[in-house]
Image (cartoon, one colour):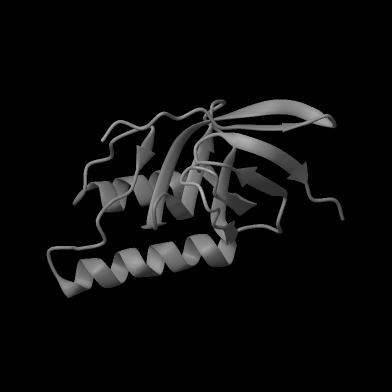
Amino acid sequence: MAVNFDLTIESPAVASIKVSRVAAWDWYDGPTEGLLQCEDSITTFYFRMLEERIADNDGDDVRIYGLYPSELELFNQFVAEVGAHHPPRWPVWWPIWRFPNEEIAAADDRLMQSVIEDAGKLQWIVATSDAFQSVRTFPVVG
């Protein structure tokens, strides 16, 4: 499935940051949780959907995501370990969470948990109309 992907984190207070790759381990009509990497290939965030507003007209839904700083090494480790069983397809990759055996599944579950636990404090709130294009972006201060 081809994905029209153009997500940019923008705020008047900082320069724009273009997202280049998304690795989503949870998906419901679009990504709901995972990791994203920015175009500079260094900046990485753990993301999760905080809220969804379902509209009467299809395509008018709004999703609110929280972005939490994450380590590039965790992004690379996630891609390497999960990608060994489900090759990545960029720019948006959502591997089916099935593995050859329970040992591999447990290891990848632990990796996913470490990403969540090691993420920094909420840094951005992003509102999107279709999960791949930013509607509004708000930095979290404090």
